[in-house]
Length: 186
Image 1 (tube, rainbow, N blue to C red):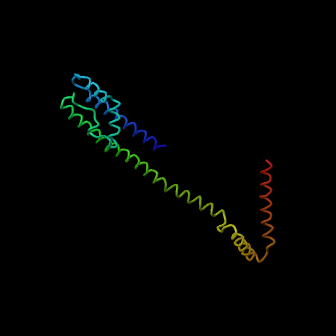
Image 2: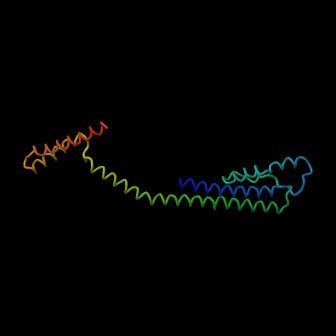
């Protein structure tokens, strides 16, 4: 959830930069002189904010060439220089600063997850050990043999008094069976 918040924050910052530079560059594209003929008026449609936004968006991926930019023949010469400087600053800020900001935010998230993963691994290991202690260590067909060995060891310790051991085990089994029957009756 926190990753989405950081990504949303980055996208908002990126959109603010793109919107600001779009309006700035669109204002540079506006002619300083009125076009004398209709051909020049047709070229001015390319200087709209939508076209500028599209140009700036695709310039993030390196898909804009100088030939595809709207013509600047109705703008003074210093306007062309300002446009190149503003476009360079835009690329510098968006590609270097903002992308590095995104990388830093994701790196911080990765480090926090990495620090927490050690705790989660230890917790998972403790649960696994606890489950293994509750169960038999041998697989299903072989566990009959190991249970027989355990019974024989207990019988040997009790001087072969199997009756008492089996009576105790039978009582325990009956108690658990009665408890389970009562549970299912409820």
